[in-house]
Image 1 (cartoon, rainbow, N blue to C red):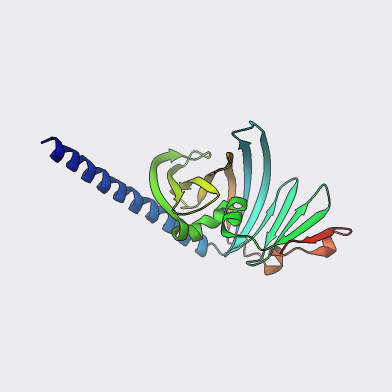
Image 2 (image 1 turned 60 degrees about the vertical axis):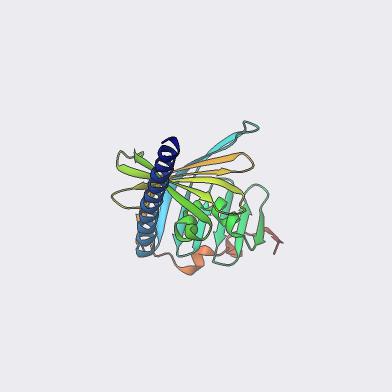
Length: 213
């Protein structure tokens, strides 16, 4: 009898886990479709980055423009452009710009919104539950955990029900770094030109370029 009860419990847990994954994937697929149909987005966000091991924390605000797999990210200290292959990272204080070819993990840690388009390749999704976004709208929370080797330990995405687009992203790295990004405004149909996603040297005279590729 005890073995039968344990078997039934395990079966129930498996079914519940399967349904949770299906719901999470459906929500993420809907979010990805909404993004693809958006014709480019621009978002304003507030971020809090904390290293759990050292207790060091930093808060800042910024904006991001995205279209397809390209993005341009602006924060007070750093500006980043990614054109789909090359990434430029400009350090405001040092007036240096680093050129690199980022890995998938690096892109996802720099811009977690890229997970909407790539999560199926490396992550397992599960449904956390319903929640309320910062603007008071109903939302759903989804968790992503890596299936293989990754610098990322866990990602949580809050998706607004009315738009299917993210309202909050929480990224926990294996090194103890935790980033919480709250999106305060999301504009769709922005359709930024391709030059938006590449570094324009003419706008940054005297900059030092460091090629890390």
